[in-house]
Amino acid sequence: MNTQEIATKLVNWCKEGDFEKPYQELYSPKIVSIENDGKGENGIAEGFEGVQKKGEWWKENFEVHSTEVSEPIVADNWFSVKFNMDTTHRPSGHRSNMSEIAVYEVKEGKIVKEQFFYDEDN
Image (cartoon, rainbow, N blue to C red; front, side, top):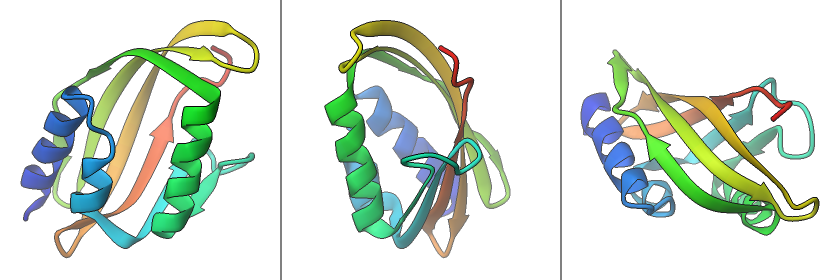
């Protein structure tokens, strides 16, 4: 698959609310996932195991009420997607709307890197 095909599949699955299938079908086993600047508890996750642990942490700590997903913007081996999410932080009960840009790198038909950019003061 080329970058556009991967980007389109990821966006379609996310719009359907299936955030697991992209990891199973589109991601390299050597995936690197970075939150903002890579600092903090889940700043950098590597490989399927690391990404799975990060996902479990997210599910434990956040209730997602709704998600909006943009169409991808593709440039060579890179693409970006904007996510808008309405979430509640379970430990504090704080509900907020957040917007983030996800940037993905594709090599050899798989996503090898993802990085999320967002304001942390929501």
